[in-house]
Length: 506
Image (cartoon, rainbow, N blue to C red; front, side):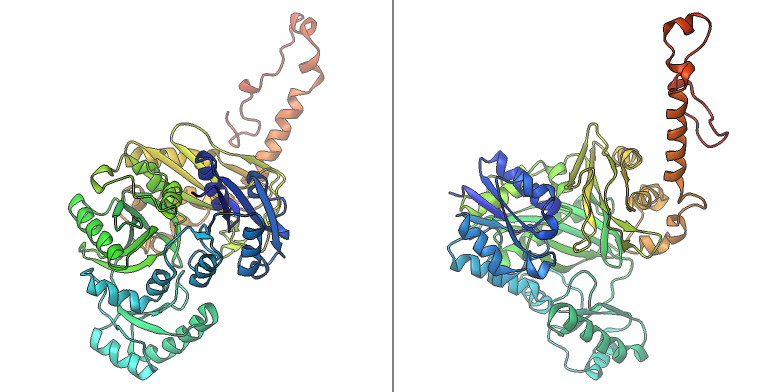
């Protein structure tokens, strides 16, 4: 049985995994870089081990150091979280060779589905719809041009080992093909060490919809329904929701069946995601498979009531799924916003710094997966996401109103975050009406720009708060009961109106 798990990750996902371990009676081991010595996941675990310097290459991507820590602490299993080594087949094989359970799919499955071309071929064999395109590696820009002419413009040029939009190009004209082909190959080689690219027909007005799946070692596979992930900037997700407001129950059922078929076709074990593109006519196509836990997994957990991390651990321990497909139901609606330390007004540049003050929202239907605290310094070395804000409600409109409210309650002082930007997204009519696709950000760029004079709101509020404090501490406000009896009236914060006319009304 799995009794001790090393979490080969950092931040909020490390804490998320550790919480599941605690509830299952499993001890957890944290690994950390020198930059993360004061990170919350380090003190949250039962045991902790420093594995290297601040850079990811010296620590969270260093397989030898992680394996050494696992052996030193005599763990039974390693959970990779997401990012870093979570989809690294070499790491999974190394765990197996050392007699350590890797909480995830087989390395062969990672390799098969990590290569977009081989994944397309497998999906075609399984009867899963794929976007028309090439099934083999392109050998030259001239061949790419010939394929584009056959498929018809516009087309998408993609890196076979790609992800996150790297190595991806939209081509709308013949004269751009060779230049785009060379640029995509160079970017793919720099990002993934593999310059293989392929071509797909461009899907117009696409929705990015994914299905969560679980597969055990006994051949059982189920899906846990859909997530709408179309609010994206440069192919990076910002806001996700479940269920999708775009697809109906008939299409949802068909896509779920194909997601299960896709997972069975590759003998999938563990938690994974089948990603689809759905066009404006409700035709859907396989996009890719993520062979790991997703950042947005909490909204599925909130809607279906299944702890995905616990299921990962149970599956890795050899236990059969405790659910049948008919046991899984969607209940209510959930929305997730990614909270990032970044400056949205300056090209979304990372904004590391020290958190001076932190106020997190509370109330029914609210969940925060985060790792930060007051006084914590966000390091410059890693992804700027510092947490995820998740809300649940019985209906979508109530979930939107709840998210709108908690985004105004969420206060992080000391560094720049994207919280105001997220507020504007929630207020855009297209989002509130569920009338959006992957071009939402571009089409609502004007609405998403900050209002003039809005940037210094925090500074203005700080001045107002200081003035209230000053008034509350005036001599006539602290003189006691005798002065009050003589007719003086103490200043009451709840009756302080219009300190600056038009600026503040309590």
